[in-house]
Length: 463
Ligand code: C2O
Ligand code: CU
Ligand code: CU
Image 1 (cartoon, rainbow, N blue to C red):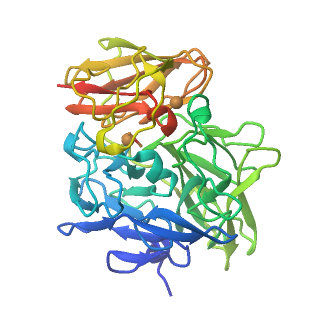
Image 2 (image 1 turned 60 degrees about the horizontal axis):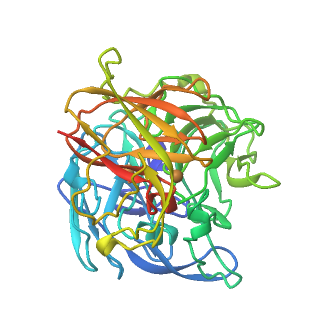
Image 3 (image 1 turned 135 degrees about the vertical axis):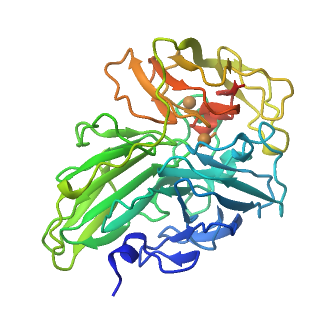
């Protein structure tokens, strides 16, 4: 018999274990021993035949879920096992600048066979994720995105903790990978995939104890898709947003009012399974003509008779509150700017096009020399960044190294929850506030990767 704790994480002893029948791998970092992850090419069957040329860190499966402990230093040793250069980035984690995995800005690109030790003690518990930041489009589109869980110091005691990595693939008639970058897509909303997956599976179904409490961790790791989540007829609540416990409640998403989750964003949901055995809960994406089932969870066994009221609120993460009365304001304009320039990404690949800009300056490429930051910030000072979207497209704007909160928008009320990625809707003007409390050069870009790679990128400097 598995104890509740084993069932919770789906793991026994040791760093490597398959989830208990969950169909994905979980790796836990242990203090003092580097956790080895190495990228590699692999084949995988999405249901209609083998697709070759995918990239994971395990053979024939999605990249593993990595688990760290809050405040405990761990070393993630990433070895680039593919021909392209690479680096690894830990999205949303506040870490020392040299561990951020941004080529040329914080480290040099890793050639094939080269390892880099990413050592840090994550200050915040919650749901984060990881992906390469060099030849990003190609490696992410081929599958190299994984969920990074930082466990709370005190276990919130769920009966099942289920990470759900949402990602599309673009496949042809023979299940081959199609071109993931298109100039037409890059100049508009991005190129969508045609095969929606969760943990690399199409509409997987998981088992959870009847009457039990389940934590779902949705992570939108696609290069393009803005998910529209709906959880109709399910009893639960949203209790963390982009890694952090919610300060302000978010409405339970319905078919008519789905929850928008842009590329890079995460949402943690707590729910209670029905008491009857065999009940199936469907988690929907409102895309296209009919809702898509992204995942379902079926109740099994005799009811555990738990109650959502048993859940204590998660402890707040140690994020400094910005001093709005003294905050300095900076304005940033995100816009369209077709340009003849070919971005210089050095060893990190090129898109050959420029369509986007921050403050009318397209990012000249990761390897361009002498590029100034979009904002020069003083360590310890509070800031309000006013972000103007002058384009008719949505942009999930992501800031590395610092955690911020939206405080107002011209589109209506905003929930002031801590985040690292703000989905800036078309024509929106939104203010985000934070304390510049982490020194370094921090990448700041749109997480629609085709936008990032065609100009909508920059960095802020904190000194
Ligand atoms: Cu999730 Cu700069 O990235
Ligand atoms: Cu990031
Ligand atoms: Cu964008």
